[in-house]
Length: 215
Ligand SMILES: [Zn+2]
Image 1: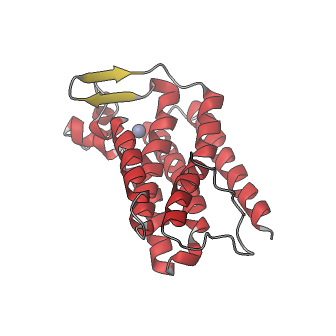
Image 2 (image 1 turned 90 degrees about the horizontal axis):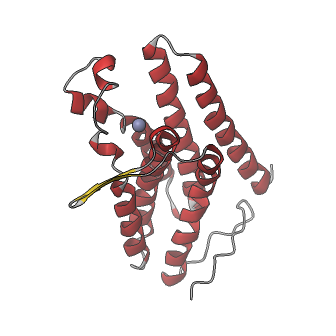
């Protein structure tokens, strides 16, 4: 299978999960536990595929355990972000966790903005590709999770002197940004590869990228 076809299949699957997860949630209103499982599984699978696309691009620079560790982190973190509902509610009951009067702390979108800033710093340091990749899969988890939640509630930015929520994200914008997220990160990480004088990953088994020229 050609690398481009494989990549297209990953994107088609991610799009299917985005749409099917949302449609299923509309259909399955009860029981609440099943609805929560569908929601959380959708977050996890989107995080899994988006992380895999980023990590796969650097597979020639990584060991097998590093690859699996990075992809698993993107997947698991996308899911466990919702545990903050239970922590804020100080309860194990789903009803308490889903009836909070405020957004829980891991849904603060300042987190993925800080992660993006950290990636920019990390790519400016030559030979720190692995650190950049760990930051990238963490960013993927927070960004894709909060973006999906934002179609209902918007983004929430909380920092000292800041407590701001945006309007809900338009549905097609959510779908497009979810698909673009891993490729935006690959473009960002390619700046590090060039600065570190490593050979960019453009083997026969990879989709060839032309990094954007940064002025
Ligand atoms: Zn959430």
